[in-house]
Each structure stands twice: as C-alpha cells, then as structure tokens.
Length: 104
Image (tube, rainbow, N blue to C red; front, side, top):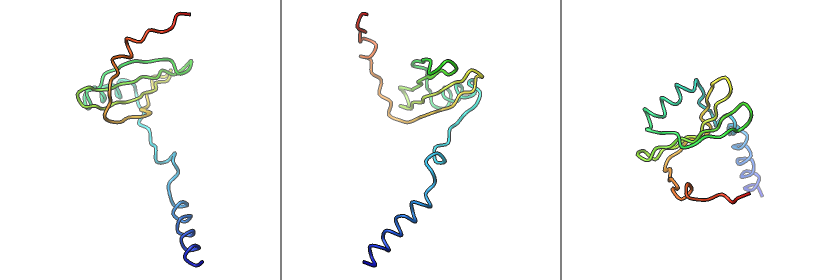
C-alpha cells in the first residue's frame, strides 16, 4: 500500500512541476520579409501555396526538397508573420496537382 501511495505522489508531483504546453510551444514571429529571408537562406525553403485563414490572416506552406525542412506560416494584416509549425522530412505529393476537383 505504501508503494502505491509513494508512486502516486511521485507521478502527480512530477505532473505538477511540468511546464504548461503553451509555455513549451514558443512561436517565432517578426516582419514577413525577415522570416521569409531566413527560410530561403538558412533552410532553402520556397513557398508551395497559400490561402486565407480568415479575413485578416494568410496561411502559407514553405518547404525545401534539398533539406527536407518545412514550415507553416501565418501572416496578419499588419505584416507580422509567425512560424506556427516546422519540421523535417517533407515529402511532396506531385499527384495532388493532378487531382481534378468535382464539377459543381
């Protein structure tokens, strides 16, 4: 019984000391020109598409065939860009461009 209480105390104690998820996920934000320059020069990334996320935000996907890196950016109406996600091992899907949308 004592071992179970000690184990539970240890687990809950460690959970209480863990940083909140929001703190662990720090975003890189700045003027769009600066962020784009870093993606191009440091990672060799190029834009592969963009779309309106809302009336004031544009979402972009950048990636590099050479380095395999990828980034998802959101730019607001003020020109501030934030890197929302980034990673490695990007795999392009050339078949995506060949898919025909159903006619309305």
